[in-house]
Length: 117
Image (tube, rainbow, N blue to C red; front, side):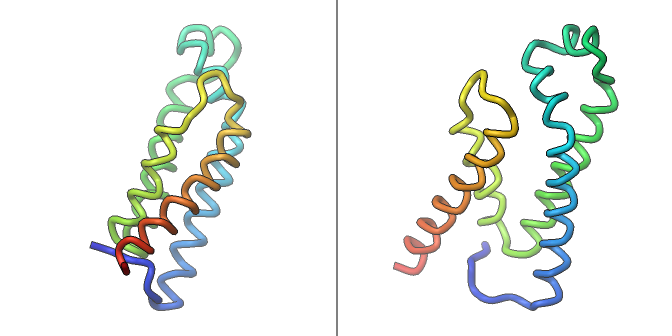
């Protein structure tokens, strides 16, 4: 099922490296994601390579999800999914990333406490 108990250092470092690299790459696409909020056609007219960005986002998000789940089980998946419910419509993607990080940390911490309780 997964928990936040200590894991092997090597697995943690590999997973963390993958998550940081893929997250940084996704952050580089933040402007394109902001334009996607206008619709795919509008984003394409504004110079976004729609299909490329969609494929890169899918691959990078899958890599992050796989690394998180392999390191700490399904609790990592919960930590990635829950912030989507807290997304503010119309907010810039860069602000959403920072807010999501705080939400992830808070909810996973609370779930860990409940699990141990």
